[in-house]
Length: 211
Image 1 (cartoon, rainbow, N blue to C red):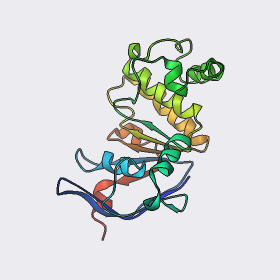
Image 2: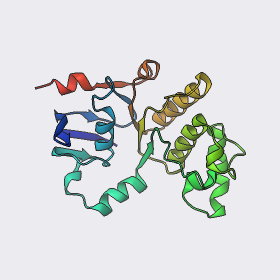
Image 3: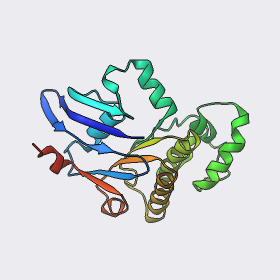
Image 4: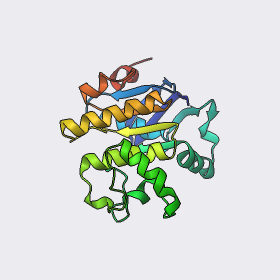
């Protein structure tokens, strides 16, 4: 999957977050969006994931102008191609781990889900309620969901924030394995150790200052 932008701009409550942003992101890469707090990392990530509306410019996904997409087209993209791993985990706490992976209560999905849970270090936890998982476990559950749906692109906001060393290293290795399987992974992060593992860096300060 390829995502490119053409002179996109975002303003929130009359404040310009960024403008005239041109980037090209290609599949099979781990890409970090970096910059100081408040620079617009998460906003850009959300724009690329079609969650945040842009004020100007265009975003193209595999060459298709998403500006003309209707809600059903965006929903299809989210459902079939994209997966999100955000700081609030995006986990449904009052549902089981199995449900959070498949978004289905069909028991026929359990066997495949068990295999995926073993990949992310959560074997045997499928029937547990998601609310009992730790922060690191919820991050890995988000990755399990991306693996299950065979996401072509993963959007992750600070995926290693507040994790201990063991969980951090596991999350990084899981993201790299997804990259090696052909997934485009776009991260908003200030974690220097994670940035060092990435194939490309989108520095918000640099791209905001381009003419």
